[in-house]
Length: 255
Ligand code: NAD
Image 1 (spheres, helix red, strand yellow):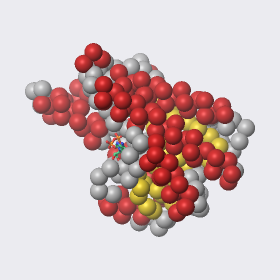
Image 2: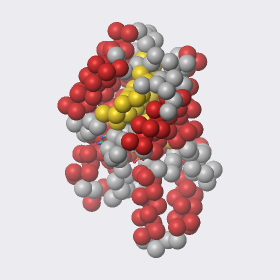
Image 3: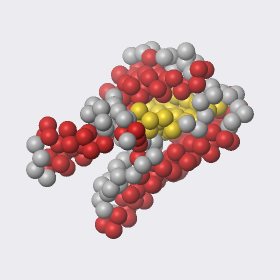
């Protein structure tokens, strides 16, 4: 049901972003991918659904690069109808030892980029009279964890920004919502499992411990499951879902 619509999914060369891009493409959307690394595999995977697909390498820590990407989307695709703000990074350290440069990078990529893409994409959505903004926040947009000062601050910020944009678009056919995943087994989380393995925990135990600390289901959320929710939020059934922060977290926030 998304035929003729264009979705920009930031950070979609791997992990959750790629899963969401795939699902929206399968529903008929044209897709502008973004992210680092070799985009070839993602382009092929998303392209097999038959819609138009391209990749823009904008660095989400650069407001100038973000502006170039939105201009490219307007020029090449006729605009951004669906904006999925997904690009994100993590760094784990106690607050007093948190590298200042990592703090700045996480705030820029995980929070400020959402402000920049939103402010730049919204005028086009208004002109065309339809829009969906889906922000990939986190369970860490609702609660904290030790050693994740920048990430938790940024994700709480994303949930707040989502509410403001939802209010500012409340009387328009444009919605803005956040998805708050628990643990998803992507490179971002594998790194945290690897840190436990490096500290001496056997691999299977490291995976189990990471889940057991936070996620009562003891199962990872999948990019495919998040793709299904993103697709729902893009549909007419979700036209009055506005400013929500929807957890998909195996029960993380229930306790
Ligand atoms: P990932 O590392 O697999 O993918 C991150 C993507 O962002 C990649 O495509 C990468 O190239 C891109 N990226 C990183 N820095 C970028 C930059 N400066 N400019 C442009 N692109 C950049 O991570 P993931 O787990 O799929 O995470 C995606 C989002 O989901 C993030 O916002 C993350 O915070 C959030 N999230 C992840 C989990 C999880 O358990 N994996 C849980 C909750 C929320």
